[in-house]
Length: 292
Image 1 (cartoon, helix red, strand yellow):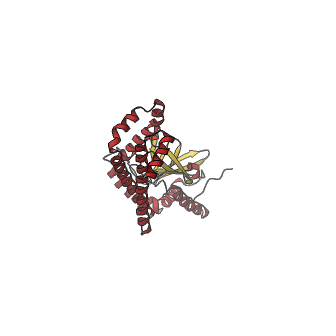
Image 2 (image 1 turned 180 degrees about the vertical axis):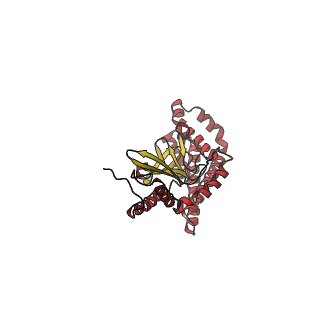
Image 3 (image 1 turned 90 degrees about the vertical axis):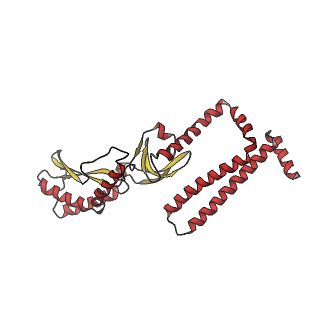
């Protein structure tokens, strides 16, 4: 006990902080370590079971939330007799420190907004400012997205995780590609010779698109998704099936094939469609346009 008193007196001499407050800080740190350690052990036990990565992630999110609530409760008990003094100390914080904490406080409020209003959730594909990616984590201060390449590169992950302050949801425009439903309209352009039979070519293209396993399953899913979202959003579509538009461009016929697809499957679907179109062209069923 005397050794502890000596340590506290030494720290008091170095920091100028009263011994009782130093002791409270030490106890608070010990409580933090113990709570986090217990959470780690529980997480490890759960992870060792036969659970999917997604289940483990969700469990850890709930566990961390519970651990933080318990930690706040414990620290409140530890500091209960000194709260008045703490409030007094906080009231004398300099203006500079207050400005420095402003962003942190704004991010905390934005974090509450994200949790309550849910402009996006984990696994949503979003775009904030010039950053586009899939949300992989949401915390009290920030959220992380797995960044995607641009449309030219098929919007596939580049492996970079970007940390974005929560306050960006207030200061930047936010696009969510999966808010109401998980599908977007995609388009591909197929150019054929001017002499080609338009009706036969459109018929063949419809056949290729409608036979795609991913595309043909979406309209029914989309109907259900729109019904589910109709209470929150004024969204409706007259046609959910693939459609092909025809246009004369630079001495050739340009077909624009428009269809619904999950944004994370778009590049694979386009790959499958183009393979089918190329095979049809090789068989002489489609006359692809060749520039002179």
